[in-house]
Image 1 (spheres, rainbow, N blue to C red):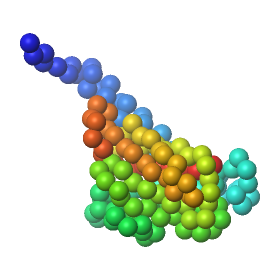
Image 2 (image 1 turned 60 degrees about the vertical axis):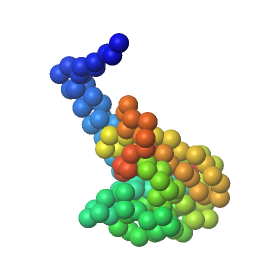
Image 3 (image 1 turned 180 degrees about the vertical axis):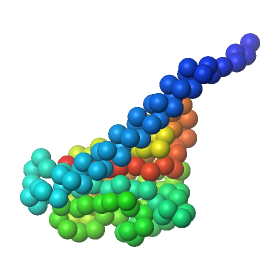
Image 4 (image 1 turned 45 degrees about the vertical axis):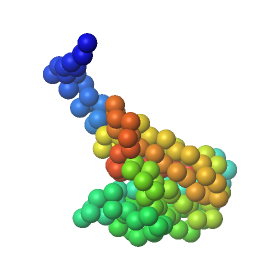
Length: 152
C-alpha cells in the first residue's frame, strides 16, 4: 500500500521559516566572528583561531569551486587565519568541501550551512584541514550550498 505525503500550507510556511532562520544564523555567525577576530591576540587558547565564509564565485556558484585547493578571494565572502597565513578551500564532491587553515593546528571546529543546509557536519582531518559535509533537510545526498566554518 502506497502512502501519499501531502504538504499542508502550514507545513510549507514552517519549513520556509526554518530555512530563513538557519540561513540567518549562519550569516550572523560569520559577521560576529569577523568582528571578534579583529580584536583578539594571535592564536590565543580559547580564541577564534580562524573562520571562512565560503560562498563560491558569485558568477559561477559554489559548485564550481575547483578540486584542487584555492585561496582565491572570489570564493570567500570573508576569511581569517590567526597566524596571518592563508585559508584555502576545495570541492571534494557533492556537498563536501575541505577547508585548510595553513599552519593553524586547531582541533575544534563548528560549521553552519546557510541557504537551506541545516544538516551540516565538520570532520577534523588534522594539520589545519577540515572536511565539511552539507545536506538539505530531508535529502540524503549532499548539497552544494554556502557555509561558514569557525575553528578554535
